[in-house]
Image (spheres, rainbow, N blue to C red):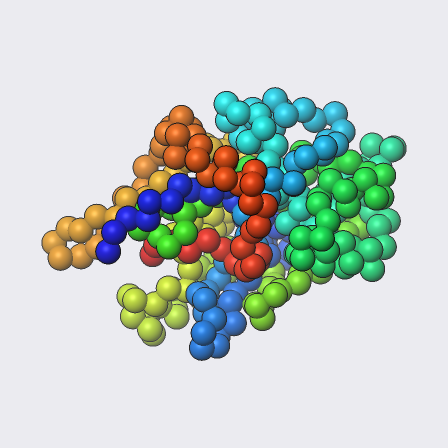
Length: 295
């Protein structure tokens, strides 16, 4: 097996959070348990690759591209805006949530469910862009409604390589999740500990080869299980240096070592991909799936 020569493509995962009687809950998806389904029976957060059109002519209220860059600890403001915009599009496209404000500078709460459904379908089908959907309602994107939580770059040994930013997001007041799956995935609310306990139980019954969760998803869940509330998650100070795993063999067993990488190193890897993405605006068909990761 040879390393994948492709450079990591930019992508986002959306981690919706809410308060409940059991504590902090996250919205998690689980792939269908059917033959032929990629990553069947696996827990994952909604995912999408970044599209070039996500951030073109995007209005962001009083936010600037430099502010997005500071939030992500990135040197390139354009790349930072692309990450934020893709997360905003994913929220609308697959979750039916509009992270936007009106002329009164308040988060929108009165967009008709049918409009959100129609816009989400058109976004999934690449018929419209995220900025054009917002302009059609005369609203602007609110990047401050999503919190960068973790940045993960999978290894060259993966079939597809991604530079993925995980964003935490509280569902705005007056809005409700309307999850849309295109590959028969289940989606629902669970506490991080409930998910981890379920994964551990299933892996005990299926052996070490079972892959019910990716390393990156586990890291996000473990970091959230001690957070007391949704509000607290949005105030957390996070280390956003890219995490990149290395696969090692020791004593006849395979292990994963996870280290922080510099943004400069990831920029060099992503340079060619950035140029190609401007020519090819396609994204993965599995919009709510997670990038394949090593376990």
